[in-house]
Image (cartoon, rainbow, N blue to C red):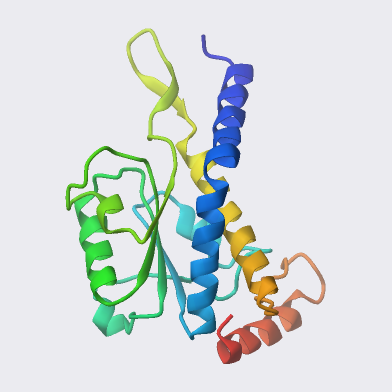
Length: 208
């Protein structure tokens, strides 16, 4: 039966599953990312129109260093080892994203896949090429209407949470290496413009 209470229950259950089953993988991924950044690596993000790029880039409290990937020509963009690419997909079987992941891996890039799990290792599956895979739910509704339509998906909620969990773990790992990544300050604060301008200048100089 469709209800707000049941939707909340399902979301909480998924987040509890992330907490119990994925945090070790998240922390391992965050450490690998931190080590690459300390080697001069840049951090990029791309999605398949799932909206996670806009959630991560320029967000108050988010990383200043993260950049959207706007091209599939990695050579032209200058993306190579030790760079990092976070790839967010609603589907594990995604030909265009898988080809991009393959090209990135061949250039020595550390590829983090935020996508559903899938059995097998088909080369058109994003997980086949990922350096690290952080699973999110399938893009399907919690409820089914009387005419068979699926409604109220939870995949976006959990994927967004996974992105911020990874961000928190990365910042923690950088702190363990005595480094502090620069974060965006809310534009609602009176000193945000001068703060963000200086912090971005420092980000470009330091790399994080």
